Length: 473
Image 1 (cartoon, rainbow, N blue to C red):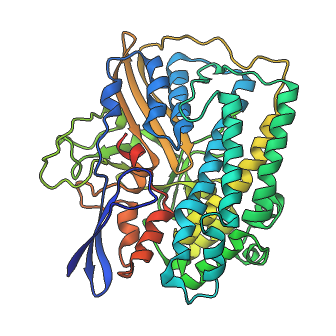
Image 2: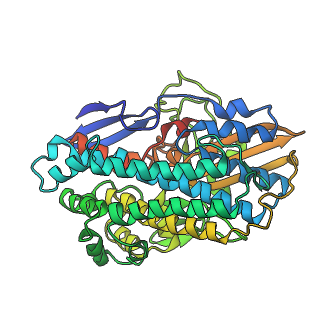
């Protein structure tokens, strides 16, 4: 047996190292390390709850809006505030634009460039990919322009990106008039053209109609970058690469008028199950924190101990029903009933193929939803409702979905001040270390059995799209 350390990884938000134990040319065991500590949870203690709206967006410069939404949901739960319907729709638009921009960034900047590596030069798809993804190449120019347009929408509606203060418990501080709605719809039409002609090669409705793996032939033949990627995925066996526990978790997101198009739940044993938040615990057995029994986040603490024996990560180990859970676009799509992905997971389990493909289905869904929410705005109605600035003392959770998966904020407020604030980010679930029972997290499990080839390891790691700065908040 031999050991091999990969890291720090490039093209990753934050710091990441992976320690591999190799046997007979394959990974026998993996340890995933988050080597940076930031301490946002401790920084929030002693502050008024409203300060969270200023502090938590700064956890991350990629999913800043998602952190804001989680804090808003937490404030609503504690104060009982009911947002204006227009405010909910604008919040959904801003949130979805960030998540859609994140999906494009993951595909074109983080994941796909590895397919243009010189190690794949003998593959029939390599030259085309290398040319499209090269600096200044057509794909690079087009996806960056689409991403910039999405963030321009966020800037108009939320004042700035990242770290907006426009999202509040009662709605949003920015109204939209008729001229602005037309301008926003025009910008969205530009993004739609990119998604339909460059990314998918299919109309959005045709993409969303794909409900079985056999229908993916439409995508392969369509001439978009998704089809190019699928042909590479077939050649490299991505459907059989990177299987974890096949236990998935998602929170509800994009609520409007009391409904959530993406349901909360757990996907286990090939079926959706109800989500019981009380069954979530965080284990710190192998984390650089003072020893404590596994606790629900509403009862947890963040007490660093960088010299702790046996620890190897600043990430805690979240578990639900005592088990690791994978979160992200794949979890959301399984719970939402996407038939093609359900069939692929039933056949081969979660994989590099299904994680990346789920984001492409979701890109189509998000764009259609943003257009719908924008058209549904009642421009004569309020965009924000009266809401108390001071939360009622108590304990509550604020839950949402970032691009990478389930995001939860738990806080306790006493006499108007935060006495505990705990966050579980998506990468906390996916990149968790082992727990007290020695159970590895999803990525650690997904790497077991992978060939000792750096690109294969990177494909698995990047399929989860790590955001390490959120992981260690």
